Image 1: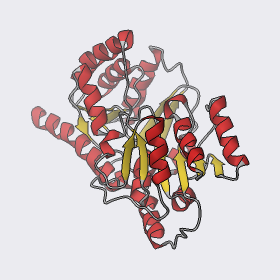
Image 2: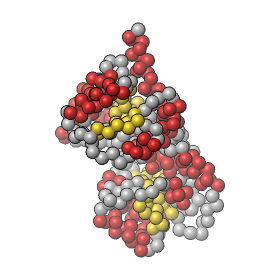
Image 3: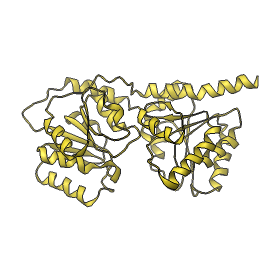
Image 4: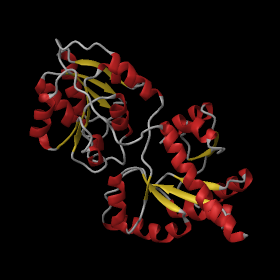
Length: 339
């Protein structure tokens, strides 16, 4: 979400929107980058789960004379909505985006259902960033508005660079894993397929949350001379060097990494999982499940393959325009009611 905010900053300005970002808690690693992008960033260094945070949110919104509150986090949703409505009154607008798929069950499902049933009454609309998220939110009775995620403008420049490349076919294909490690990312599925196919691999992402098995796999690739690069960095060079993208996640909301790869023209192999299935109709995207299918699809990849055309507009200008339209609708409706 933070990366999308940075890329959309000039486009929100072009829409006539003055934007501020509020962060709760003690750690705000993206704050300075958001400030450099032009956002007014405020950090409330209090327990983000406390009731005291509600008053701090309310006081800040009143001080800044905010018209529209856009709520991103899942945690403390009801509290945040009530604090926002307390601050901006009936004439302001609240938008909520559900950025991920939450496979809630038991008490968690009940909590989400109750919070949605109460808080959504005070919200102009709930936004889903993919058709897959829309399907999952219907399970708690939510109707959502679709606003697809977007990518940085430079991805469109990279697409032109990639199209102009002369790519030698006399080499091993290069796969790309784009994103930080973690259980839900399921990277081992893709790494196993790369090992079996004898392909090279680039991994762009933080390995702090990788399990021991995944680290051993990456080390094996490295020892075999198949690991071209690893670790966190900007993805630009990797997107140009790779022949295909792999996203083996167990679930996503709407994968920005997949949108980046498709924008640049990379074919993709993705897991048959919620948050990724929306891309199944895009030429060059293979939706697969299980070890056998992963191995077969990775082995079948050849140098020079490409993806597209993509029916979705992944531009940051479109994303900012879609949200600006939502922001204004409720404000205009409220003005009409008041007059």
